[in-house]
Image 1 (tube, rainbow, N blue to C red):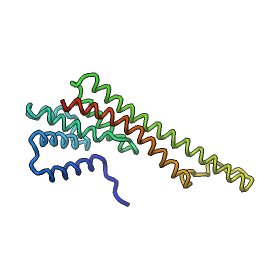
Image 2: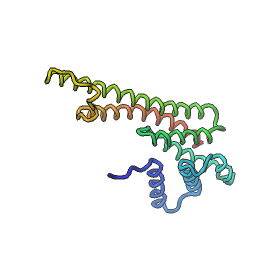
Image 3: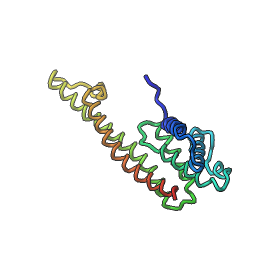
Image 4: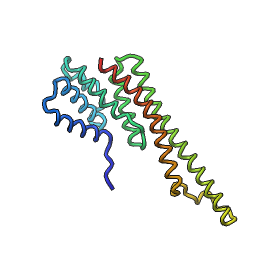
Length: 197
């Protein structure tokens, strides 16, 4: 089974490939990439905070480094399909809140909306999963009663093993992911625009 890589690893690998293809990178872009590398260390737990790292930069480079930090942090806010993605997304939001403190209430409000969306997604996903499991379980109990005339113990039925469950769960997750991706992307785009000016 292939090893699952974190979103950060994939982003950093892609950034390295793009940098290698680009050859000579403009100074501002290279400075942004330095900010992205600092965020990678932050998300890996090598740095406790971003502002002290930003303050170590030459003042002329700080805006570009901060923009690179914001880009990397925003890329790491993703739909939390598992607990690890939830943790990395929350860490990225914490980093954004830290570097946007001077950005005003709008940036902070957008970060808090992203955090709320992450939590809502997890709750919504879990509710959908439970509802689907219950529906399939009831259907399987009904089928067993029709075939044998006896009611099996619902606790002994694992609906996740039924092919219909897999099909419906995949479709439900796709719909949910599409819905939340749009909401995430809208807020992330607005936040990124604040760092581009």
